[in-house]
Image 1 (tube, rainbow, N blue to C red):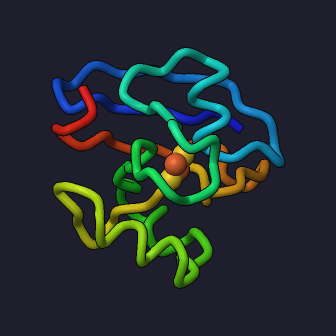
Image 2 (image 1 turned 90 degrees about the vertical axis):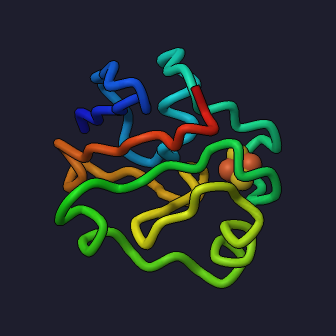
Length: 105
Ligand code: FES
């Protein structure tokens, strides 16, 4: 699927991700700035925090409790906040757009 990351300063990175990858893995593989993934995807660092844009926020599977608890520790959390390491990509997510918080420049 094609995914677009929008930096807090407005810069955009459009990448081709692979189904089965997490959104965080796809960002790292494509050198998207602002997604660090310090914990390697174990839902314990929140350096992969992003905002899911528009209707995608509703379309994605709900975060499980572990993700919600970790988001409680993140900065600048919004209702559309997700941890990119917990979002597993599928072809149906083609066109997904996510924004990055100001704390992840
Ligand atoms: Fe650490 Fe997502 S990579 S919480």
